[in-house]
Image (tube, rainbow, N blue to C red; front, side):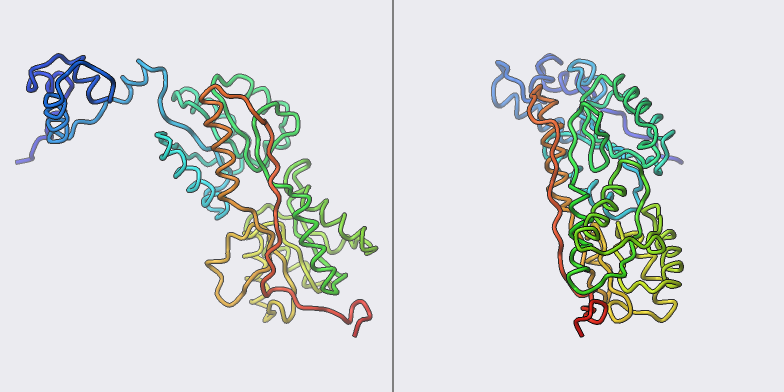
Length: 348
């Protein structure tokens, strides 16, 4: 015989057993001030604990007009940078008494649109938005969608210059510059770049930093060394295949996922880092996963990014104003994936 489910306990049930009104029980369980004897309060809490009473969050939301839920829209949950960022944001939300809904757009603009509408209909109190790469190409339409939101939101990492909202990101142009400058200082002049062509996003900024470093050191741009990717492993793999046909000796890869694909292709060809190729990556999300290869990389401090994003959104939820744009500095972490190449510059 199938056992039935235990009946859900209500505030009225607890009130009946404790001998007080449901309104008084509600005040006690929500830690609100009331003129109830301490022993009676303790009795109510004991009954609620014994019966596994759970506060009806939907009813509470109707009363307070607050759901105590926030949402994070991110482009690719499989990307370790974004999954690590999601974990950091969720931890901070929990400490502030918020639940976090995490939704992935799969880097599709149409999914960004749908998710914004769905999450507003769910009554979330605020949104963290890391928009898709496709959304960067639909800037005006995205701004229209965002203007219809009735709750505060913060753009993270990928931002639109024209968006008059709170936003926090890294100085990606400086990150691209630091990576390329380091390779140049190690004697490399035949430097490939695997980047994402996203018009005004982080990919373009990182490419701009690469080009700025080459210009500063008087190294001409070789178009054969420039390979487009999409921030995913497969594009890094294909870029390696193309660059192996050139004479470049070093590569700046604009994110870690493309670096994984790049390394896979190199190793299939019997090439090793840094003996055969010098590499600088971007993100520093692989340091705990790669065995034997210690990547020199541009570090984006995920903890700082999450902390600033949460500070901005929590402040707006409290009705505070304050700064609306934060640009965090990246830094270069030198490890073991770059070999000096004195011969290229006549230093041998």
